[in-house]
Amino acid sequence: MQQVIHVRDGKGGKDRMVPMGGKLYLLLRTYYKREQPAKPWLFASKSGGPLCAETARRALLCAAAVSGIGKFVNPHLLRHAFATHLLEGGEDLRKIQVILGHASLQSTQIYTHVAPSVIAAVRSPLEDLPD
Image (cartoon, rainbow, N blue to C red; front, side, top):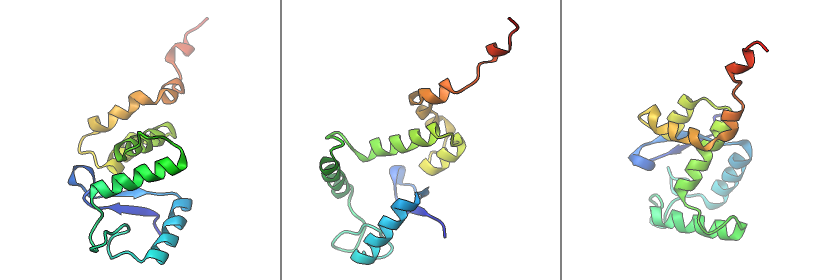
Protein backbone atom coordinates (compact mmCIF):
# COMPACT_ATOMS: atom_id res chain seq x y z
CA MET A 1 0.00 0.00 0.00
CA GLN A 2 1.35 3.41 -1.00
CA GLN A 3 1.50 5.95 1.79
CA VAL A 4 0.83 9.08 -0.20
CA ILE A 5 -1.72 11.86 -0.10
CA HIS A 6 -3.33 12.92 -3.36
CA VAL A 7 -3.44 16.70 -3.13
CA ARG A 8 -6.18 17.98 -5.42
CA ASP A 9 -6.11 21.53 -6.73
CA GLY A 10 -3.12 22.46 -4.57
CA LYS A 11 -0.80 25.42 -4.99
CA GLY A 12 -0.98 26.67 -8.55
CA GLY A 13 -4.20 24.69 -9.08
CA LYS A 14 -2.16 21.50 -9.55
CA ASP A 15 -2.77 17.97 -8.36
CA ARG A 16 0.13 16.01 -6.94
CA MET A 17 1.00 12.97 -4.86
CA VAL A 18 2.85 13.71 -1.62
CA PRO A 19 4.57 10.98 0.43
CA MET A 20 3.81 10.69 4.12
CA GLY A 21 5.40 8.77 6.94
CA GLY A 22 3.91 5.79 8.71
CA LYS A 23 2.96 7.73 11.86
CA LEU A 24 0.98 10.31 9.88
CA TYR A 25 -0.63 7.55 7.84
CA LEU A 26 -1.89 5.81 10.98
CA LEU A 27 -3.19 9.07 12.46
CA LEU A 28 -5.03 9.91 9.24
CA ARG A 29 -6.52 6.40 9.00
CA THR A 30 -7.85 6.76 12.56
CA TYR A 31 -9.28 10.19 11.74
CA TYR A 32 -10.86 8.90 8.52
CA LYS A 33 -12.54 5.95 10.24
CA ARG A 34 -13.89 8.16 13.02
CA GLU A 35 -15.03 11.16 10.95
CA GLN A 36 -15.97 9.41 7.69
CA PRO A 37 -15.57 12.56 5.57
CA ALA A 38 -17.40 12.90 2.25
CA LYS A 39 -15.49 11.09 -0.50
CA PRO A 40 -13.10 11.75 -2.16
CA TRP A 41 -11.99 14.31 0.43
CA LEU A 42 -9.90 13.59 3.50
CA PHE A 43 -10.93 16.92 5.00
CA ALA A 44 -14.42 17.83 3.80
CA SER A 45 -16.51 20.89 4.48
CA LYS A 46 -19.92 20.62 6.11
CA SER A 47 -21.46 20.76 2.64
CA GLY A 48 -19.43 17.71 1.56
CA GLY A 49 -16.94 19.51 -0.69
CA PRO A 50 -13.31 20.31 -0.02
CA LEU A 51 -12.36 22.68 2.77
CA CYS A 52 -11.94 26.25 1.62
CA ALA A 53 -8.45 27.70 1.94
CA GLU A 54 -9.46 30.06 4.76
CA THR A 55 -10.89 27.22 6.87
CA ALA A 56 -7.68 25.24 6.41
CA ARG A 57 -5.59 28.28 7.41
CA ARG A 58 -7.68 28.84 10.55
CA ALA A 59 -7.37 25.16 11.51
CA LEU A 60 -3.60 25.39 11.03
CA LEU A 61 -3.39 28.51 13.21
CA CYS A 62 -5.40 26.78 15.96
CA ALA A 63 -3.18 23.70 15.80
CA ALA A 64 -0.06 25.87 15.90
CA ALA A 65 -1.35 27.74 18.95
CA VAL A 66 -2.19 24.51 20.78
CA SER A 67 1.19 22.97 19.95
CA GLY A 68 3.11 26.09 20.91
CA ILE A 69 5.02 26.34 17.62
CA GLY A 70 4.11 29.97 17.08
CA LYS A 71 1.73 32.48 15.62
CA PHE A 72 3.29 32.87 12.19
CA VAL A 73 2.52 29.49 10.67
CA ASN A 74 0.85 29.25 7.29
CA PRO A 75 0.47 26.53 4.65
CA HIS A 76 3.28 27.96 2.52
CA LEU A 77 5.67 27.93 5.48
CA LEU A 78 4.90 24.24 6.05
CA ARG A 79 5.40 23.50 2.35
CA HIS A 80 8.72 25.35 2.43
CA ALA A 81 9.85 23.50 5.57
CA PHE A 82 8.81 20.15 4.05
CA ALA A 83 10.88 20.81 0.93
CA THR A 84 13.86 22.06 2.93
CA HIS A 85 13.84 18.98 5.20
CA LEU A 86 13.67 16.70 2.16
CA LEU A 87 16.68 18.46 0.66
CA GLU A 88 18.62 18.43 3.92
CA GLY A 89 17.81 14.73 4.25
CA GLY A 90 19.57 14.10 0.94
CA GLU A 91 16.52 13.74 -1.31
CA ASP A 92 17.09 14.36 -5.01
CA LEU A 93 16.08 17.85 -6.19
CA ARG A 94 14.20 16.40 -9.17
CA LYS A 95 12.01 14.27 -6.87
CA ILE A 96 11.32 17.31 -4.70
CA GLN A 97 10.30 19.17 -7.86
CA VAL A 98 7.72 16.50 -8.65
CA ILE A 99 6.39 16.38 -5.09
CA LEU A 100 5.96 20.16 -5.00
CA GLY A 101 4.44 20.24 -8.48
CA HIS A 102 6.92 22.72 -9.88
CA ALA A 103 6.97 22.92 -13.68
CA SER A 104 10.57 24.10 -13.62
CA LEU A 105 13.53 22.82 -11.64
CA GLN A 106 14.52 26.47 -11.17
CA SER A 107 11.46 26.96 -8.98
CA THR A 108 12.60 24.10 -6.76
CA GLN A 109 16.16 25.39 -6.53
CA ILE A 110 15.04 28.25 -4.28
CA TYR A 111 15.13 25.73 -1.42
CA THR A 112 18.84 25.08 -1.87
CA HIS A 113 19.80 28.44 -0.34
CA VAL A 114 18.19 27.57 2.99
CA ALA A 115 20.03 24.32 3.50
CA PRO A 116 23.54 25.20 4.72
CA SER A 117 24.05 21.69 6.08
CA VAL A 118 23.77 20.34 2.53
CA ILE A 119 26.42 22.78 1.31
CA ALA A 120 28.68 22.02 4.28
CA ALA A 121 28.47 18.29 3.55
CA VAL A 122 29.92 18.70 0.05
CA ARG A 123 33.54 17.62 -0.13
CA SER A 124 35.67 20.38 -1.55
CA PRO A 125 37.95 19.44 -4.46
CA LEU A 126 40.60 21.58 -2.79
CA GLU A 127 41.06 18.70 -0.35
CA ASP A 128 42.70 16.77 -3.21
CA LEU A 129 45.50 19.31 -3.68
CA PRO A 130 48.93 18.14 -2.62
CA ASP A 131 50.39 19.57 0.62
